[in-house]
Amino acid sequence: MKMCSINPCSSGFGEYQCSEFQEVCEEELDDVLRENIIFELGKDNLPDDLEDIRGLIHFQPARIFAKDCGEECKNINGDMGKRYEYFGIEE
Image: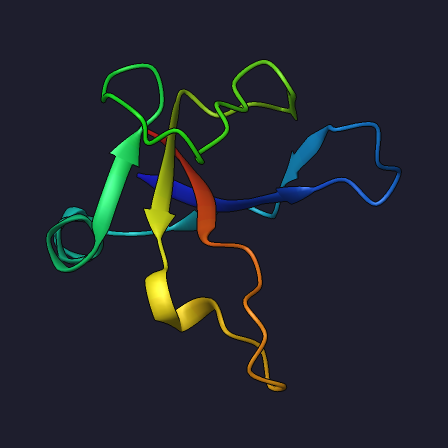
């Protein structure tokens, strides 16, 4: 199984790109899904402030998730950054 993080493209235009895929074992993925608040785009009901980015991702993976970072998303200055981190999975 492979996993990648998904971030905005540097070119902008509301598009996203995957980082390089990394091999993960099923147990690692289960830990991520169990220990965090995770939404699967296209399957779960999404919060109003979570953008469904399917179709905007270059080399889009088969499954796309968003992790709710909550307080973890504060930057070094204490300002809130992005609340959700996107990642994808290829099986």
